[in-house]
Length: 321
Image (cartoon, rainbow, N blue to C red; front, side):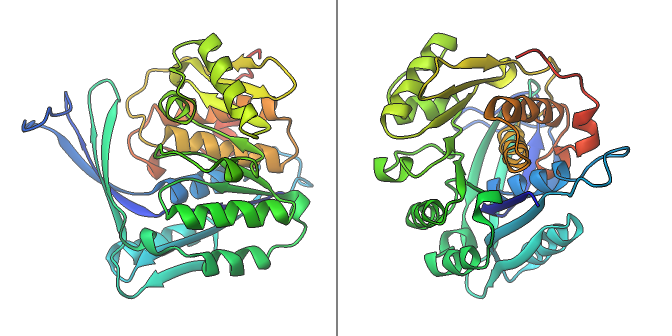
């Protein structure tokens, strides 16, 4: 059975959509407000749960992808709402801990008329996700060859590094979405199956400014030299550049859409990628599936509210890679 284990953050997103994002010291009046469940880890877990459900007309013998989420929430209304949401989505939450001392994570998000965003995060209970919690969760997993572990960088870096090493040692494929961007230990990079930076994150990790396919190829080669066998650099509306250490790499196109909010597009992409890999797709086919899913998410407001279901993605035509 396909299985995705997401280890990461859970936040409540407070979003204001306005014509423009404020400059330092500026107040922008006239925006609309909405509040959504979010956090990169939770977004990716919800994306995986929705995209792992076979759509109408699917082969009845195809098993849905199981999704386990390892996270911390606060003992407050936001934490309780998050737990209820995970249960509704069919996510296994046995290793989600309610922290008695820290509040749930909160993100303040501004979105402009072009769909671009800026985000500030108060980590709260996310900053207390520890190695022991991860160790217990990973020890519960069987059939490691069927498992894809998906992580981000909104929880403590020592915990992320520990989870990557332990998952790799157990024979699981590990996908790291290195966001928010920060430098990473080369020893940790060498334990990954794949890394999925966007242009900004790729530049921080490699020192190469990614502006086109050729610069993406150069950045990917630098990450290969650091020990990462598979590199996927997301390029927004252009799609994603896919590379492994033995090939030159290729650009996978994304369906053309009009974006209204890009807040959870990367999380949608990564959740979709993990599901497709767990189902046995090649990396390139998994990226094509992820590009389709993310293209739907940017046409909707919100984080988890924007994440599509499997039948929506399957209804889109497959673009030529």
